[in-house]
Image (cartoon, rainbow, N blue to C red):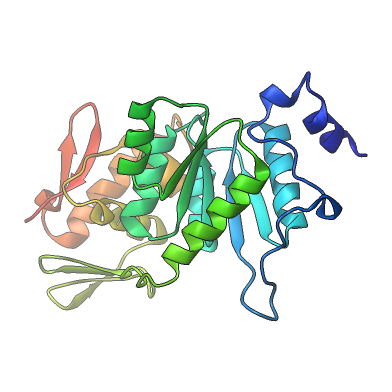
Length: 260
């Protein structure tokens, strides 16, 4: 037995893991999900900051026939979530609160999310579901139960319509598929970072996006001395959009999308 499996089975260490040991197939584990011959293999993104727990969960999912990978931060999750069919999201992350990550993903995507966390109060569950998670599991949990919940969530998710990748905000239109922005029907020439910044603001209309979240999602940096980079790009965007009122500064917090 390898070290990870033995650690999971060891009663002295099991309490530190988010789930109990994945059962071996010959002990009656749930059958693996259908593979490529029947349907596309499900891609699962595990968002978990504890390395050993993340590795064990990924290995358990791989043994069941899923494609699985893990990231340790909310910033990475926000970068990679569009490549996943399902997200297992720990709410206690080192850079961003998991609820903030959940809301950000849900604002631009219908990708199913199962929150997996040590936060077990009724209020925590309510907040997790209100933030956009499709299910909520409290650590430690059984691996068979996790598999059953994944299948249940995906059954509900399959009939969903794909979220529109075009955002219309007055005369401003942003197409995430072609990465093009138009204003009154005329194309706006944006750099890659300018487009990412504008798209993030437009994806949460009316909401104030913090500087930290902008640095995390647009520049892959949880915080940096290069904070003036944001101001430079905001200034450039305002110039290209023809009005400073398109992007409103909320002092001490961040920015929100406005109207000219």
